Image 1 (cartoon, rainbow, N blue to C red):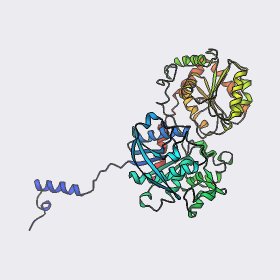
Image 2: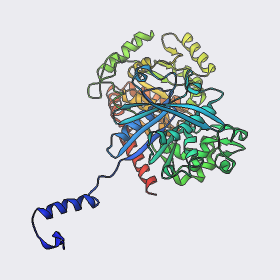
Image 3: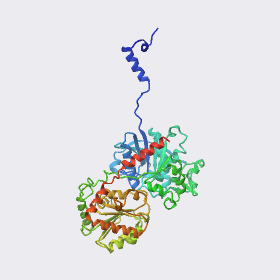
Image 4: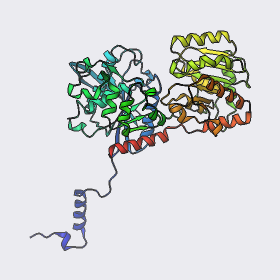
Length: 508
């Protein structure tokens, strides 16, 4: 009769063999925790295609989260016609399948691109996305409904089921909604948790209830998720079904609880306040670095800021302004729309121009403002330059060459321009709303810029004149410029906050 060697011997080769075999059969005592899987769902992402701050957030936040060994981070966006060719040539075709959207059966191709620790996926359908730009089409509802269905079908096709499906703004809202409706009974989707981020509550994805089933493929049993104010509201639906909701600054999270800022959604926000969190956006300090930026006339840093004066002089020459180092250059880079504060600027800018200053504007938007600022340049030659266009290279030159960056928004969920300007040593003057008030603190309180509270043109003008006074105090101004440049606007702090949010969602 054979004996159990582990009970009859204390040492020897047999025990060694059996111990190894036993160890192979037994579960490991020390394990390395598997990476948490995060999928960002968005309508745009830098550096591939960008129409505004959303793209920069997706590009920068995903990279910041992926820098941790704890996360497997991936991003999925539509494959637009305008995606930059320098990246498109390196996309890898994975395959294709059919997406069912209500009664439609549509082709969907998937392409992959890897950069650093982030994997990007691109949803291809030429009928929906082979068009100039990203938005503004009559069938945007159908286009992004297809995209969101394609996102969830892609998970099964590539075998990647995330722990967190992080959806951004109304264009991605249906991904969170479909997850908790059409896909909720599929076992492989049941453990996925969704986070929905509101970048701008003004744009909510509103459609007639008549097309709930025919266009979006959502049954009447789920109608209550998306119905609001007698129509479909996709942002409302994503807020209702997601485990957590975030906004892009702490102040904005508070503001949207009130009718003045919420564009009608404040009852929904207050009802879901328990899962709302405000996390301030950041910027990529390597992408926006005056020490290495090739667009600048000369490079500089907070430790060696001398060449900022060169950037100012060359900018003045380029735009046909008198070269005056002792005259403050005030700049605005923005879409020309009312909520960016242009009604305040129009009300008092000519009073400001009576003092010794120069004003530079870059942007496009509403014809009322385009015409006004074009005319202002004609009436104030040598003091005003209005460039009615979008020019990324010129924007960098303005960020580096101006002295004061004016951003008097009526509402601003976060804002990135004030952070970029500060990074380049151009002191921000902002209204205390949303992320502007969270990122810029007043000079008089030892802060990194200038602020005013009420949405009032004379208050803005008063603070602008205060900034001119400090500008003439060269030593004080140099200290303020240094403080602005050294303010930490990187994603490191924000990324940790999102990691905390993910942890809470997965452990709730």
